[in-house]
Structures are given as C-alpha cells and as structure tokens.
Length: 496
Ligand code: GLC
Image (cartoon, rainbow, N blue to C red; front, side, top):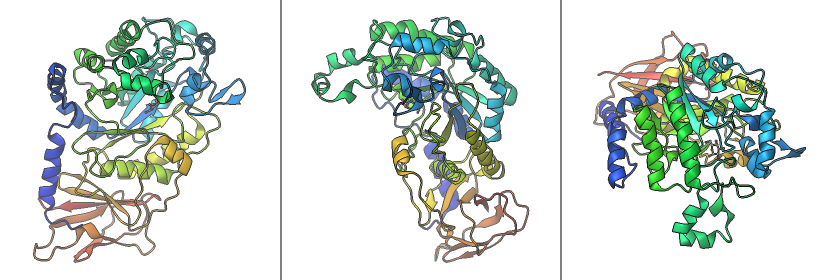
C-alpha cells in the first residue's frame, strides 16, 4: 500500500477514535440513558488507550486443585474445575475452606506487573465458582470468613497497586455463580425464547454454563438482587478509582439486567469503564474474545481489549506447560497495538499464592522488550494499515491456539505500525542479517512529492540511523548494536 499524506491520516485516525462507537444502537430509554453515561467517559477511554497493557489475574480456590480432582486430570480451563468435574456445592465449599495461600505477597505481584511494563491490573474478587476472594459483607462464602488465612487479598492488592502506581480494576462474574446463582437465568430465558427451549432438548450448549448438577435453590432474580448486585456495590465502595470492570458471561441476561449492572457502576464510580461482557451491547469497550485478535478493520472505531493467556488456561493448572515464547507474546502485543487495542495478559498464580516461575520469566522478557520499545505501544493509535510483509497470522480463541500451537516464523520483512501525533512506529520482530531493511509502505509516490520525513531513529539506540526515501520504500541501514534480541522499533518522525 502506498501512503501519500501522513498528516491527514493521523488526523483521520484521531477523529475516528474520538467519534462515538457502535455499541447500543438500540435507542430505547435504556439506550438513551446509556449513551449519556458512556459519552461522559471520553477521558477515561483515552487513559485506557494510554495504558494499553495490563495484567489479568485468575486466582481463586480453584488454583489449589490446579486442574486435578480426585486424582483425575480434569479437561478444560483451570478455573472451571467445579463445572467440569461436576463438584457438588458442599464438597467444593469444603475444598475452599482449606485454601491457605501462605506465600501470597501482593507487592511481589504488583512489582512483577510493573517489571513487564503493565500499567494496570484486573484482579479477581469472584469467578464463576462464586467464592469471594475478599472480605464480603454479603456472604460468608469468602476467604476471610471461611479459611484460616485471615487476610483480604483484594484489599492488599489494591493497596500495593496504589503504592507502585498501577491502576487497579476487577473482574466479576455477575451472571454465573455455580454456588449461589441458581440456574444462571436459563429457565427465565427459555420461558421467553420458545425456539431456544426446543433446541435445548438436543443441544446442551443452550444451557451452558449453568450449574445444573447441583444448583442453588434460588431464582436467578434472587441471586442477582441478593448477591451479585450487593457484592458489586460493596466492591465499588471498597475500591475507589478503578479503571475498568470486567464482567463475564452475560449469556441469559435480559437487556434490563445488563443495563442495571452497567448503571450501578456508573452511580458509584462514574468514570469507571465497563467491558462489553456486561451484555446486551451495554459496554464502554469491546472484548473481541478470549485470545482473539480482531481482523484488520473489524474493531472499527471501538476501543477494545483482548484478554490473553501465558499458556492455555487462565486459572493455574499444574500440568499445562505449553508456555508461550517471548517472541509469541511480543507478537501479541505488537499485533494488538497495530490494530488499536489493549492487551490484558493473564497470570494464573498457584494455590500457594505465587506466580509460576515460567510466568515470571515471561514477564521479565516482555519487560525487557517494553523498557526499550514501550513508546511504540503506550498511547498509540492504529495507522492506515497494521502490517506489511509475508507473515500473516490469525488467532481465534484459546482452544484454537492450544490445538494448533504457534508455528509461525516471522521474517525481517514483516513490519507492524502504530502512530502517535506526527510519529510512525515501525516494529520488526526479527533482525535482518544484512542490517538493511525496506519499509514498502513508505514509498515515494510519483507525482505526489516526497514524504516529509524529519528523522528516523531506533528506539533504545543513540546511534545515527542512515535512511533514504526510494520509490520502493524507506530504505534504512540499521546501526550497530541490538537494544533487544526480539527485534527493533524504528521511530519515523514526520515534519509537521
Ligand atoms: C471465559 C471463561 C473464563 C475466563 C474468561 C477470561 O469467559 O469462562 O473462565 O475468566 O473467559 O476472558
């Protein structure tokens, strides 16, 4: 592709991202009210884009069995052990009461996030198992009341985040609660969707992911009113100044219910952002999918965030050793950045409360890259194209990645782009042996006059970079020295 007027493009990109997005097309009363609340969050969305890179932490009582129940390896995600092993509620509760993560140290976790160049943490006060990892006044089914641990890990993380200048946020499973959530709204949903009700006789996915093996004897509404909403309100009161709320699996929720969960956040923390998994198009930013990067252009003008794993599970599984390589993880960061998104990279600490050694190593190597090249990530926007070069790769889901592995070989002709003001960042994941690269997207356009490049530098290097505009592209001779082994970033500054 040929680029002629850089300035115009940057301006256009800015306008697009500022413009209102495509959520909640439906302008009923709730749609209108949502619109007002959402419009008031422009600054918060810009801050979210500035931050770009965060840490997800899946940690709960399920981290203790680590994917094994009664001596058997349980298929699926670590945090789903209760579901896949069909563990009765009382039995699961007993397991929770033994949870004693003596090695948990909030400051160590926050320091690890900082080391990796992450700017925020999305912690996990309650996942689908319903066990509160904080001192909840709503229930005794929480770490303070049920275990001998006697500490509130969420409160400790909140404090540690404050201390180290990391923004704190939470994940909360609002609709699914295998302990107290009844049937997760399945019967209410099927009562109003006869077609789906018919399907449900042959297709078990219709009732996914409800606890139907030993459901709590309450209605879904009772659960929402007596546990889910009160817990969300107490969390919002307990942790002021959060960046985002990560709701999850809104499957059977009605439009009214999703709206209420959006609004209750706004009422207590008006600038806190809410992800699209609140359900029914009420979100401030979009979640394309687990370990899923949208295709070019698919995200349109939305702010978005992809959650990703370091292996193939979120909650710790002792036998998942398919750790992603540093190159793969840097690819994820680079590809997501080049498409304008945020990356929320997960760590699954052990039942004792420590990060797996392999994860610490991954975070360190990412941090080494970010400390040199982070400028190409934080606060940048997508450019006209996201990538040039021979290697294209599409990753669709956690399962997809687990099944197919990561086999792509990048080449020194692969470049990813991100932009900020009058700067274009050109990222390569491979060093060329020849020390010469050609960025074809920056070709001289016959008749249009040369692009007005003011300077070309390499991030992390003080050495002079020699460059030349040619009809084939921007020709660059790389200087001596490698600021990071996993490729480099060229900073191309245009005259204003
Ligand atoms: C899925 C899973 C959940 C995980 C989440 C992360 O929705 O149900 O276990 O927390 O993805 O994005």
